[in-house]
Amino acid sequence: MTEHILKRFDDQLEKLEKRIGKMADLVQQQVSEAMHALQTSDTSLAQTVIEMDDKVDLYDTKIEKLCMRLLALQQPVAADLRMVLSSLSVNRNLERMGDAAVNIAERVAMIAPHAELIQKTQVVKMGEVAADMIRDAMKAFVNVDVGLARSVAVRDSVVDEFDQQNFDRLTARMKKSPDLAEAASHLLLVSRNIERLADEATNIAEETVFIADAKFVKHQGWGQKIAEDDQERSE
Amino acid sequence: MKNINISVEHLNVFYGKNQALHDITLDIPAKKVTALIGPSGCGKSTLLRTFNRMNDMIKGARIEGAVRVDDENIYDRAMDVVQLRRRIGMVFQKSNPFPKSIYDNVAYGPRINGLGSRQELDGIVEQSLQRAALWDEVKDRLKHSALDLSGGQQQRLCIARSLAVNPEILLMDEPASALDPIATAKIEDLIHELKEAYTILIVTHNLQQAARVSDYTAFFYLGKLIEYDKTRKIFTQPEQTQTEEYVTGKFG
Ligand SMILES: Nc1ncnc2c1ncn2[C@@H]1O[C@H](COP(=O)(O)OP(=O)(O)O)[C@@H](O)[C@H]1O
Ligand SMILES: [Mg+2]
Image 1 (spheres, rainbow over the protein chains, first blue to last red):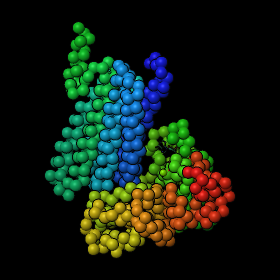
Image 2: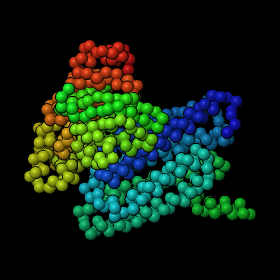
Image 3: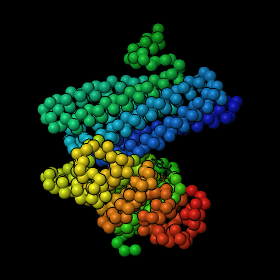
Image 4: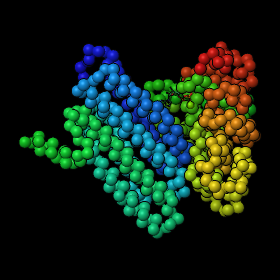
């Protein structure tokens, strides 16, 4: 991006980008540690995920304040405005991802007595896909890479599919052995939370497109939108 | 120093490009309380977390040097980390009882480790709650939810839960920072009693607390170990001016 006449504005935009990057690192750490804690029944590691939430909240507040200051004092327009608005939105997406990771971590202890259930589901695979989506969504956002952003959105349906499979398998097991019901219910909710992670990653991918060309793809259904775009292009 | 439980040798810890700990060497004695003090960000939690390899998962975190627990380098390839974390209990700032009964919270670890008989479990639960100085307060309501306990009781319950699996070392990261003064005093009393049986490491930003509960104190500043000595010495006649300034409240 070419520099603004006001150096201070550039400095603040840069600061904003850095903070978002740091927050994203923290949240990704929360997600990977929550998944690792789940697989190894490690309640201590799970607790560190829960404690990290304070740090994430701190970043959330800092980023929100910085955006507010930028809007009030610098009155950004056009691309700059979209950048600030998107940052606010991505910030919120990241904060919710942190909450989902905490939610997963909180269930580790309840699943551990029947940890063998985990291998009976797609939860681990699903967690890997979601983690990749988050990483790529952030990469796409930072580099304004619309192609990569689209690849994130496409993967969302894979995660939804996994979630459905987990639901079927776990409810079947609960019917067969009711003593598994508690652990299985918690695992179901873990699956739901991973699905939320993927949703939030998809939201970030959508922001990237918004930044890139202000096309508002949210709530339109990705598949349809992409098809329309491709048609526009071929016309 | 006799009976060394944990031995740290030339430890460097990095988070990406940032170095959080610089060439730390120190020996932690068995069955004593060692306090880690220093201003926020000086690396106390980082050091505590190297003892149960809790930093392993952090993206970009890198460790050089050795940490030996009972003469075994825990950063050795062959180390079983899950096993290690069972030997080393950890108590956190936020008390984290599971949404289960008081009894089930304490019985949790032994059950996971395969102890099943009711009698065995009853014994462990009572003994652990006794040791955590909570038994008298909860013995009539073991089946009640742990979440109904006060903050201070929840923290002692978490200590009881750690004790139930018979750890050798207890790591405590600011265990009383969310508690009121009375609950804090109870935790401090408890730490005092627990050192009969366990090696305790406590991170605290409360200097008076470090002075009250610990036998040894390590003072860190900007990721470096500035001074490590008997607590008595650190709080009466420290060798380093930086330590002197910190414990007298001139910075931090
Ligand atoms: N997960 C992490 N990723 C990157 N840097 C970290 C992480 N945790 C701690 N740090 C950095 O390492 C240094 C020491 O932090 P910490 O051990 O938490 O200090 P203390 O417990 O003494 O407040 C700080 O500069 C902190 O920002
Ligand atoms: Mg700390």
